[in-house]
Image (cartoon, rainbow, N blue to C red; front, side, top):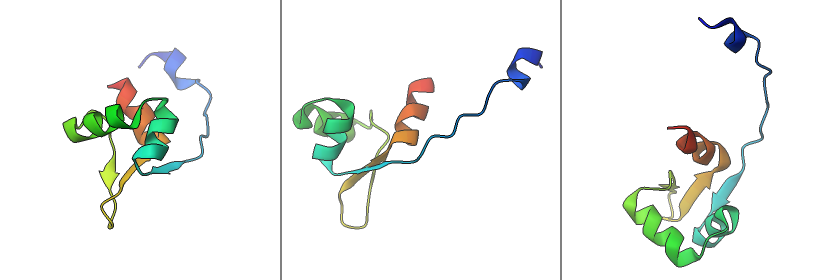
Length: 67
């Protein structure tokens, strides 16, 4: 294992839940219609809650950028 990876600092990030297309669009700084399209395509890693509303966490979004 690369020794430089073993000494990286740990960063703590609070989990933030964005509920609904408007909140997700605001977080992503996108138009709600564009967000709806990306949600339908599965390009945004959001899930539906028990009421059917889209929910995205900042952590899931940031992780999706790494892959």
